[in-house]
Image 1 (cartoon, one colour):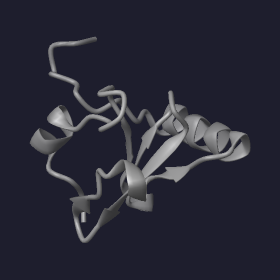
Image 2 (cartoon, rainbow, N blue to C red; image 1 turned 135 degrees about the vertical axis):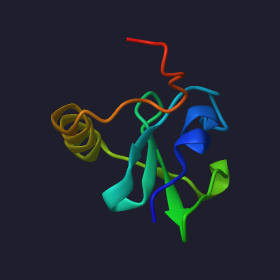
Image 3 (cartoon, rainbow, N blue to C red; image 1 turned 90 degrees about the vertical axis):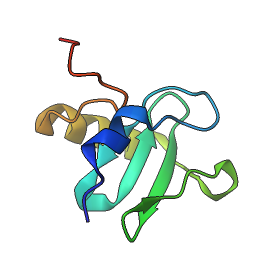
Image 4 (cartoon, rainbow, N blue to C red; image 1 turned 45 degrees about the vertical axis):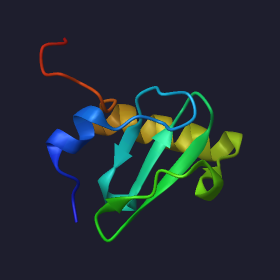
Length: 82
């Protein structure tokens, strides 16, 4: 189940308050700055630092390559940005 686009505009990492990458097909939100992944369960993002998963370097590279190839943008986009 895809997250609502309006929700994606306001979702931020609970630790560093920065934008996330949303991988709909993997049901996850990813913070590339902290290498931290947040699960989306039944269409609800689990934004708890204690439940986040730390991602190793190879998984980080895979996710970043996938984001670039699929044109996945950061959350918190307002639509007015390039």
